[in-house]
Length: 140
Image 1 (cartoon, rainbow, N blue to C red):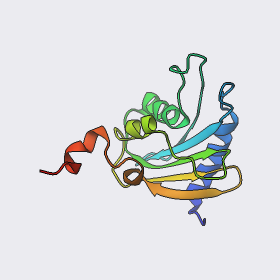
Image 2 (tube, rainbow, N blue to C red):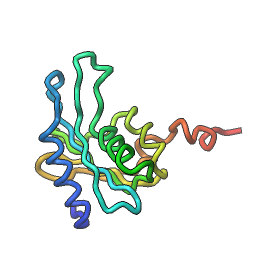
Image 3 (cartoon, rainbow, N blue to C red):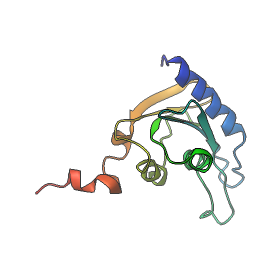
Image 4 (cartoon, rainbow, N blue to C red):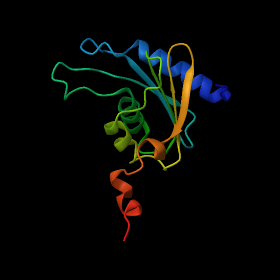
């Protein structure tokens, strides 16, 4: 998949973040890089597991929390997620629901592994009925 330069750089940031993953229980290391509209910085995140599992935070939410704690709320421009899988690993439903607080329906999510980028999808494709847009999808 041919990527624009800034997405390629975000992919490298996600790979670096993945190296910091604390995943001793699942052994499923994930890295993320999220760019917000109007902010030059790309925010990295990695999954940080906890033995209680409920205390675990995913890479995508880690990046969002980092941005919000540093600079306040913003609108997501794009996200890159990497995992050690042969097929694309999309954000989990909880992460997608958190994204819904910070994005429009068509922002791109790029998914890759250590070798390459595997797929690009929109938020809408991955979570067509988030809690924020349930009324739009209901018929009368």
